[in-house]
Length: 360
View 1 (tube, rainbow, N blue to C red):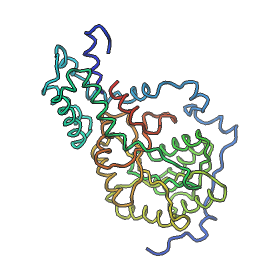
View 2: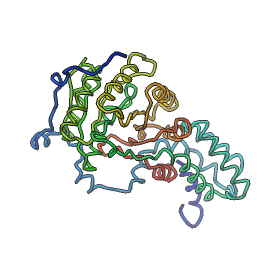
View 3: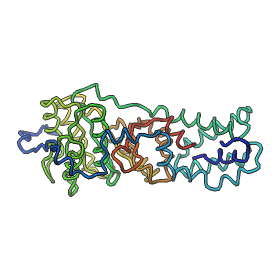
View 4: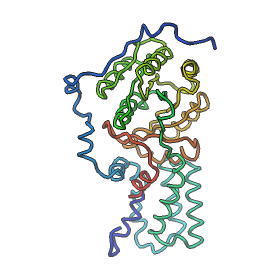
């Protein structure tokens, strides 16, 4: 992100309702069991095995830095020439910095907090050059993001029910597949529930992810009652001693009252099995939607009560700064970030890694 601060140093010697419990619905549900080893071999080769992942393991910050290249360019393009020859930090540089932050969708609140803190440190002579600016900027940004770094603890219930929601096109179903892989690598048993019975081929897509991850999928087919499907899945997971169940839902806009009511119904039905379920209501948010997505997430939160976010497609947008806006505006945990198309390009959020990657 602010690589220009380091590039300047190249000139120096060193490089720097009614009861909705489904009645006998389980008979209508089907469970796709994990495929056998022969079928697994036919699964698309882009899916990385744990062994392959271990062999190609590289530094997390370096990987993240490459994935955030578009956001970093938003800040750094043109700044090198601006900094050349500057021996001190002045108001013009801070103004330019502010513009760059806003361009990357950091948001008014977060940008204001960053700039005010920098100006205060400049006036106190804590910041005097590009190096000290770089250090203080990193500290401030990490401080803003750190409250969002809350690891999802799935040991509080069994099965631990994760209800995944979001608007169309955010990448919910794909994120569920990657999330299943993440938990399996932790040694957890996982079951998927095909609660998106509205979108054409959504059930089939989730079943394919089930095959790829070698996990069962509970489904009833297109047009079925989502609450019934997810209810059946939780019952099945309980009987099979499954650790985690991840439930897909149809994409919807916060303005679609009937579909938002459907989510509320799912939560009510689940509470009949477990008063604390779902244990996580996770919204998948496309980072490329920027401030618009932020507003949508806020409306989802107001309607059904969210407990966490998964921010996807950070590799394909220059608006990666949206995480700072999330931290300042929503104050919700960012559980996971998506930084690529690979099955392992979905990882728990680390504030320190994220900032270090941006400022590399």
